[in-house]
Image (tube, rainbow, N blue to C red):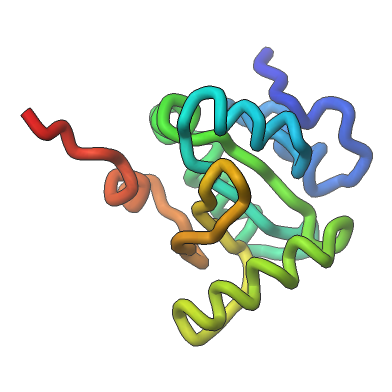
Length: 138
C-alpha cells in the first residue's frame, strides 16, 4: 500500500489522499526545500472535504497511476485543505482571480520552489498535465 507524506495529517481532506499514488506533501518547508533541491515546480492542489469536484479530480486524476507518475517525476505535489489553511487558499485564489478572472475549487496552482505563482487551473484533468511538461530541445 502506498502512503505519501500526508500520513501524519489530521484533517479529513488531506487524510483522504494518503493512499493516492501522488507523493503529496502538506504545505510545509520540507516540500519547498525538496522542490528547490530537485529544481522542480510545485503543483499545489487546494480543495476541501465538502467539494464535490475536488473528489472527482482526486478520483479521476490523482488516483490514476500514470498521472501520478508524471506528477511525481516533474513536480513536487503539495495538497492544502482550504478550511484548515484559509490564508494559503486566499493568497492563491487572489492570484488566480487576477490571472483568469475567477476563482474556485478545486484549485491547481503551479508555483516556483520559492512559492511564487506562475499559473493555475480550476479543473486539472489527466491530459492537461502534458501542457506543463518540458519539451526536449533535441
